[in-house]
Length: 177
Image (cartoon, rainbow, N blue to C red; front, side, top):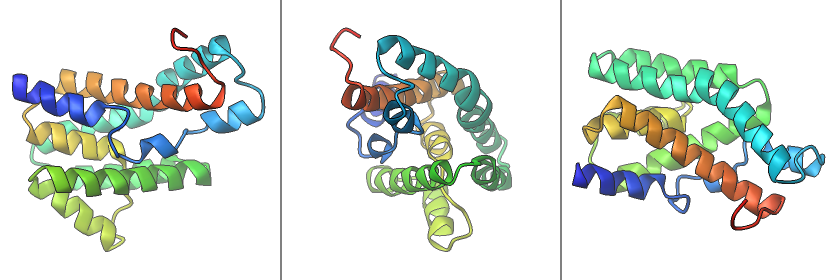
């Protein structure tokens, strides 16, 4: 567990160069439109994100990808990649997910030896797949033998941590907010 913990601490750190730091997943737009103006409105937005986007799209995809890998159904992972891309109605979200996913694949492939992740990167470069961080996270955690509950808990932590960093920069939020 100690080695797994160190890996999770590294890849879930808000400073980890996954590309998520530069993408606010809509938070920045709400700040500019003054719909998010303080810690209370930011908390509402974060809760809404978790209850919709995370639970029914990104987090769910991470779980489904993890399970598909466990069952050796790799085609299901590639199908999830296409579905995630198609489900993102807003161009900004689609392109943001793509950029973050591609950066995440690139960085993870430099750090970890994982054949499935290398295959994913090859498919992305060949424009056969789009790239999504939830799938990268599932592939890496599965390869590191991190169980599904810890994988999902860590993924939501990393996601929320990244969004909080965007809130700190954009609202701004105080240290204890």
